[in-house]
Image (cartoon, rainbow, N blue to C red):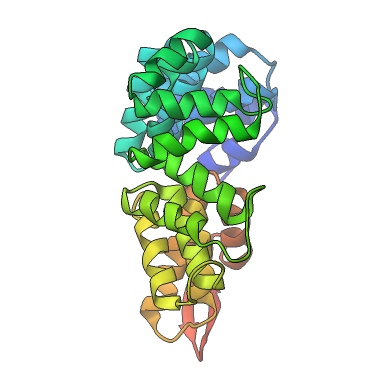
Length: 302
């Protein structure tokens, strides 16, 4: 099969012929080709850079239902100030369990505050008891925020939001006390906030709790519970959890089921654009078939 006839070769090719085949595929409405063409126009690989054409093809890939394109197109729209449309595309990606979109659902609800309100308006919303406004105000008061004051002042508002049950604020506070500036060796409050956030379904917190149980840092070491929390995060598409869980399976490959699970976990990372997951997957498997023999993975051919 020639490079021109092989879609995979066209994807990898940087010559004009390969790019030409990629364009033909994109014009036929193939979502992955639309997305790849958008990336080519973004970085100029094998084609002249064109931000306008990159956005055009990214929008087409999003409209074709490709989750990562839906998410990234939402990010583009945020940059344009089209908040409502950005939220729509992020929600579509989240419905497909694209982890960045799932996590950003909690962030997008803050954009109407962060992008629209001034400091006085944000404080008024926070004072009224709006937990999201409290969280946003806390973030913006941090050094490097929109209205920088101090980490101490910022933490006051984020703590109030956490106490009102905002899972992102609970995660932020938890991280700060678990391993941030306010970490104390004998203080378990950080991981307790992470547990609250994880129980509310926030994927990043579920990963953190998995790490805490796996390492014994803040929680009694428990491999079963570590695995449980990673699995909950994986069910929402978290590639970080998938990578960590894959390591657990890789250390203890006992059955064919374990091998199948390991492959699927690395595949999650690769499909989400996670560079580690992609490299690990390709390093172990590439495009080869894989079998489990005598406690090890072996390639069985193309």
